[in-house]
Image 1 (cartoon, rainbow, N blue to C red):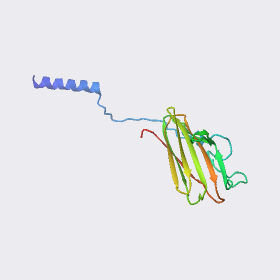
Image 2 (cartoon, rainbow, N blue to C red):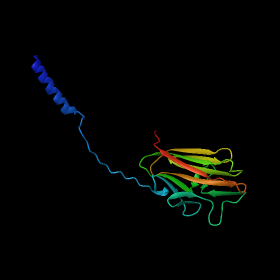
Image 3 (cartoon, rainbow, N blue to C red):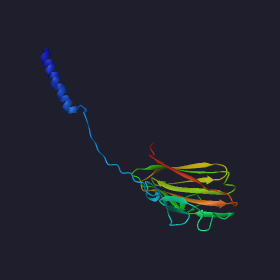
Image 4 (cartoon, one colour):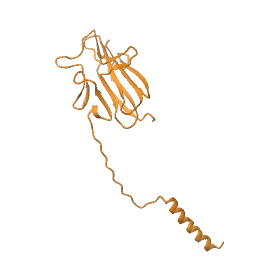
Amino acid sequence: MNRRTFLGSLTVLTGASASVFGTGAFSTASVSREVTIAVSPDDEALLALQPTRSGGTVRIEDGVLSINTGAGDADGVNPSSLYTFGSWDQTGEVTDPILQIRNQSRVRQKVEFTYEWDPVATGESELVWYFTWESDGITHTDQIVVSDTNDEATIVASDIPVGQAIGVAFGIDAADPGDELSGDIKLKSSDPNV
């Protein structure tokens, strides 16, 4: 084969392969997309915090979840008393939640619930959080005990399906006046496969 025939064939093959496979190169591109980001109240957000009763100790105030045992003229709960908010059975399964943490996103979520408190301020009083959720037909339960032995605890609810909620209830075993069980709730939601 002579050189001109070879170069001609090579040029034809190169052009044909570029048209079949494309070169992937371009000089410029212009793409516009709309972005919508709205800040919603806690009970309407992607990770929704939804009280199950209106008013009362657990409520939405100005779009933000509030848990406050002081209401009206009351400053808190009685000493040497037991209070329940919602209910649970002997196994710790929440049967009547006071609060739901609902996955309102478009994908399954891993939800971490952390409670942080001052262990010195708790005195002899105790607060217990109860959690129940379902994933793929299996019921899961967990709890956090707030006492003077720790200052933080976390439960992890893995693989919460779209539209499903974690049922939350809590109980207070109040000991002495002045004991403080207040703290901070921190929620983290992420892809369960990461």
